[in-house]
Length: 608
Image (cartoon, rainbow, N blue to C red; front, side):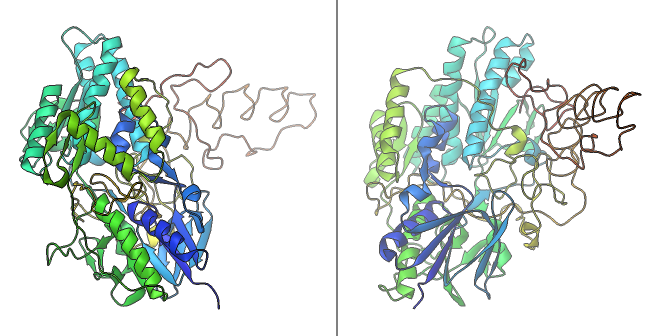
């Protein structure tokens, strides 16, 4: 008898827990395949500490192949799922297409940034859902402070040192709290103009910070933020975003080069493409996490609308705690459907909340006991260490070093602004010019990436604003074992899914992946840039006379060279990633430095 084939789509909190549980239960008696665009599980609750330079990026990642024995890892993003044929069609990181057949399917595709119909936000804001976005924010904040310190214009200095965070849930609160400490430490060594200091603003239309939490914890977080210097404005949000700043709903215009979007999440668009019953973008499932009418399909995490036994008639919120626990129940029920064990309904019990506010400060209420200050900080960090599936010693070591040594505020320049668009179905992946599926047709917003043809087969996958019910809350799991529980409320992270694209014609110019404007990487570069139409006397373009390969001088063998030979400068025939025109070509005498913005060449001043 052949072994059952189990396919898990996504390795966020739900998918990773399901794969780990099934790995232990099967003991090699089933073929378990995990489809995910990255080879790691991302521990999202500690991502703000990566952006603030407290933790190195690899500390919050856990190797999938190293921690999931008996599980086959397939790198790729799910394009579509053939429910009748029981097959998952995917595209790998290099553009190759593949198919995974299954007997049991676990959908744990996670969530993406929630969008609102606010002018300019998609073009000028960046989310905070993946490691590339955290790395970009750390580089960007460091760069703005360094540029501000050298600026002669006080208005430019003030704009660069103003950082606006929208959304006062868990993510936004922690980003603002850690960000203020990070920039304050930077300006101690590189002071700004007299009387100036970095300014962080936290905006939300809610009446208080952390609106889903207990009021005492909310008050604690609000007090710590204000004491630290964060400009907390409740009942206020962004009305319009521009290159020069943001217009607030109260009429004030704030000049800034930084807009961080933390308003919540929406379910991954893959769920909508299945044509199954949905609840605000999430797949409806029964208490055993099975999709009605499809007994071989299970869904969990942010992709599933799971009945909440504690609140009859409602569904569980999209949080990491629920995703983690649902992943285990989904695995147990998959095994039961194959004859091992019995089906179990999903139940939960929360033991409290934790919020890391940076330094020794935190807010927590374990077992309903409200804590603040150092005791809350100790409980919060202890819980994170116990909840992480790996890297606990390395994380603790980084915390110790951060307590006794100054942080390294340097730019690595690894992630560019245009490579982490806000509107993306894969926040765990940084976009690259000329990557698989990024030169197809389809209209996208400025700085966004065009998806491949498979992704466009999803009808209506680009969810509108407010699709999903993001509750940026978190709780301490009653099931949390050492190394087996997530922390606060950020759900499933990366998932095996494909960037959605819209049917359409030619993408807007200045977009990576379409007909790029000049000075854009991947399009038609300016002259004298490597890979495009080089200047005369440069190898590869129209060489100087008497040089081999082009139009040789008279008395040279070969006569007149044929036109349209490789290297003739047509970007359409030879798309090669290139730097903007106002940067020097790479070479042995070119000094490295911060990367200038290339997604808005007409207005760029640094990177924003």
